Length: 455
Image (cartoon, rainbow, N blue to C red; front, side):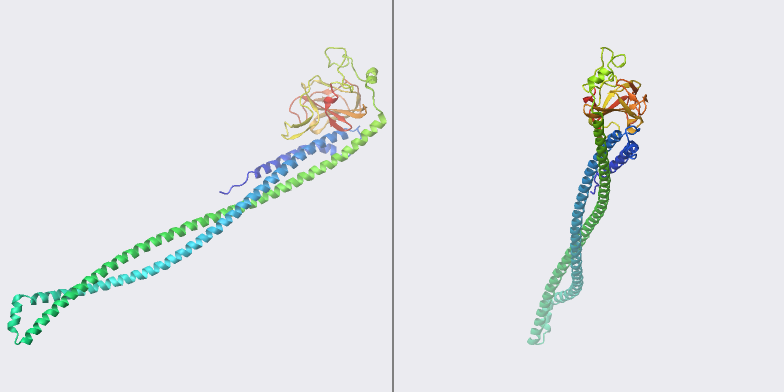
């Protein structure tokens, strides 16, 4: 039975999935990628674009991997169906040879049948002739028998002797009687021989007729059987030819999809490298310009807020929990989904989770994790309502924090905020499955694990 490989449908599903993913990525990235490299003060910072394009690269890399697997499946299916077609064609060739042999055999049987028919005709003619000879001989024999019977009685013999005029006449009469008797005996013997020949001819006729009937039946059955095999082999070869054509089409489609995914991935990688180079340049400029900040001095100067009256997240204790780098937790909630690769709950793909999620109720206040300048405040694709604060150089590195999925933003671009200052409220805007804060930390423009800095 000819079957079509199952890989073709997954390939089509993969293409549909990639088209949907491409649309999502485009919606999330176009606002950043098409604007060029802009200063941090604008609503679409370079670091934000960098994060978005890294997510796009992860998705594109998965597409390339899936496309490679799909292409391999298509190649395997094509090779398997081609082998099936080769086998079917070989079977068809053998079947056609068998059919030709059967037809040749049928022709030979037909020749034997013609010969047998001729022999049967001759046998029938012999039987008819024998029947005529037997009928004639029986008539002659019956006549001779009557004559012999009538002439062999005692009275007849006496009369013959009395009527004989001389000894020679008597001898002639006796010789005649003997001849009549011998002739009658010969005719009886010939009759028996003809009857035996007739019986043999009739027996031979019956045997020839039986053989003819058997040969005819066997020949017809053999030809019909092989003709059916030929029809089946021809249909199988036709079906397999169609299967090979379909698999070749699937293989070409899989190759095209992989080429497109690879080209998109390479383009994103080139863009990422360009953005990374610009981020590195900016971080170097920040380092050269700022020279770093001393956390102790910032706390003493009040730049980092530690009083519970000014930072309402702490219920007890005189001070807010402070990390060694001088950061505080921006929401009264525990961390949940961590930084790193994960299976995205909405996109249903594995990709990089460039932040840490804090499960919190919608409407809860969000506070700046460190003092700095707001460089992004607005709607940002999958991040929903999104705020980015640039903290400048801390500990020899340029640091920024991002706060995604807010229900409401409480700051604006260019505004300076202190650590612990209200910047917005927890929400579930953008690509989100529920109320939470998606917190990000950028070090020299690259996303890093927020829990490295957040207590």
